[in-house]
Image 1 (tube, rainbow, N blue to C red):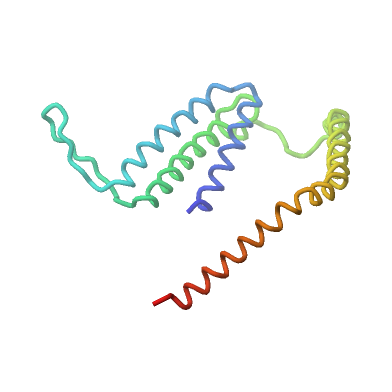
Image 2: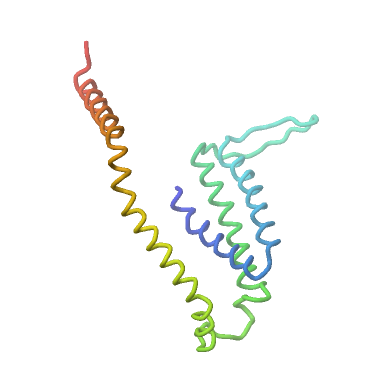
Length: 177
């Protein structure tokens, strides 16, 4: 069930980030708040069975699907899907800076743009490679020492877990009478 909602959640995250990067922080925040409310409403409708409530003398029937935990997952997926569709619509159609519909242009890279990307991104790329390399070297230096220090603690614990599992397995195969 989780896998069904992952594409919508990912697209929503990307669309929200793209809108924020254009300076429009308010809209994605409001849509994300709306997602929480939609999630609560969908959960109410999908988790519980149909019920009738009396409020101030009025009988109100709330429909429900009685799906339990699956209803909670489905409600969250539906809320994410609605918010993702809204975010993508604002991103593709309504955004002043990066809308695709109704604006002439091309997505082909231009040489002056690529030079600018390389000029801005190269120092960051070099810094990330240096930091990653330093972390790998540090791990290579520290890992043997950690293993030597933790070995007297880890081996008895590991042995205890293995013995417990084996005894449990034997007891399940041959229960005492």
